[in-house]
Length: 344
Ligand SMILES: [Zn+2]
Image 1 (spheres, rainbow, N blue to C red):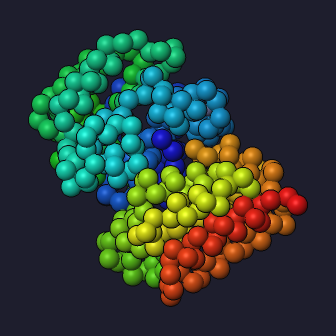
Image 2 (cartoon, rainbow, N blue to C red):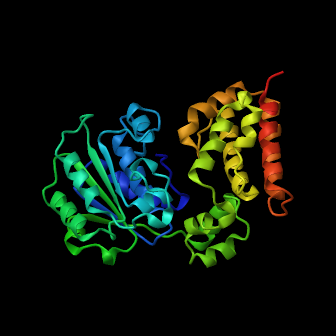
């Protein structure tokens, strides 16, 4: 999984990371839906898996622990997340088999998921450190699942922290709530949310924000122009990760027929941002899972060509609104990618 946090979460993360020294058995993060509380819970859990955290406690993103978190293979981290939220947040590893339609996914945490958790809790920590269990949405637990989770919270195994996240605190069972330290997540201010949406390439952020009751994430994700399936996104990123060696033939395959320019431009401009930052020796912000590839592409690319391509991505965002033929425009920018990056 990719660990990401949002600019309005600094205080929240500070509160969570300050607990690293003396961990409670349970933490319950709550706040309105659409401000990224699952992401904050995951970032906190990731920080506990990191063996070489940054001075402020955040995960380093480079150590063995962080690499295992990224590849969803850390043996001491368990996610108990509803099928629906797994799909919505791209946490594909927890998807049940044979489910592919969003509408069929359960919004509740099911008993099978907490049963698996009990098995996990019966084991020892593999890496010898803390174990973390992230539960979301903690306000949507099927009754049997809630009972099973409560039992684990009442008899917490050693060195295990339960990080619960809930959109609606009042719907969390009082018995579960009382076992946790409560941490409230604040929604961003209107100005903060608007600035962030503008940075993401959303036009009329004010309007979108009003339509989503002031919550920034739905304002971004529920804008159909920006919608892209996880598979399409991955195909596009895999193409970009090949850098100058990207196969022109694959450029055509990387563009789905229903991909909008706006959605492609969002991914491309984030990739361009990460590339420019990597070229300057800075951090990779949007696609940490592709960090190695981004750094290799930035290091190998002809600098002038690299920045020519990054500039052309800006132009694509400008034409995104008055679309001629989305496919042609996106394919053209993908084809120019390998050409611009190649050292002659
Ligand atoms: Zn680390």
